[in-house]
Length: 190
Image (cartoon, rainbow, N blue to C red; front, side):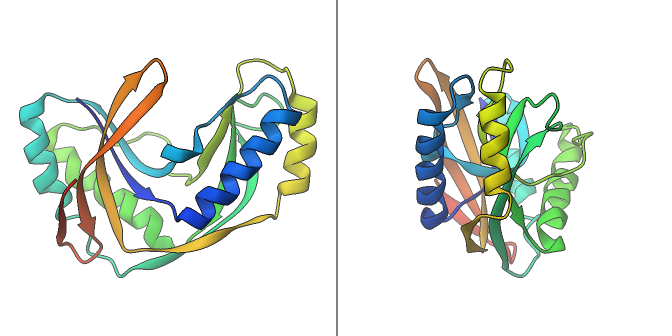
């Protein structure tokens, strides 16, 4: 099964981003636009694991939530790796150090299970589009400049979740397997 750990984004933010993606989809041809309905903030992509290992992952994640709830502000847009040769167009966020600490705690809890730590630095973002060519790049740069400081909303993070991802021709389908409160208590099965 294909697993990842994520934080859900507030419906208000999801609605604003859906409107933005729809507006840009009509104006900018070329990028592969994200489906906002399933959008989440990934803390750790685990990847394919055998089903028996999922129980150990659930137990390990129960120890990662020793943080007080914190506020995240969703704001601005940008490109990965940069604007000159972008592969991803994203919406950003402003969060306290607890967000990166939570991602690090998730990594630390999973490492004893043989799940390697991410080599890249944690850069929280929401993928809006993937770019496979330079088609539409001029228009996308213009939109990004206009949206650089745009506020998409905010939300209190009180839980993180283990999700299962099933890849289908229509796109990935996500199933929440478990939720974990930031005080270290499990929120139950999906």
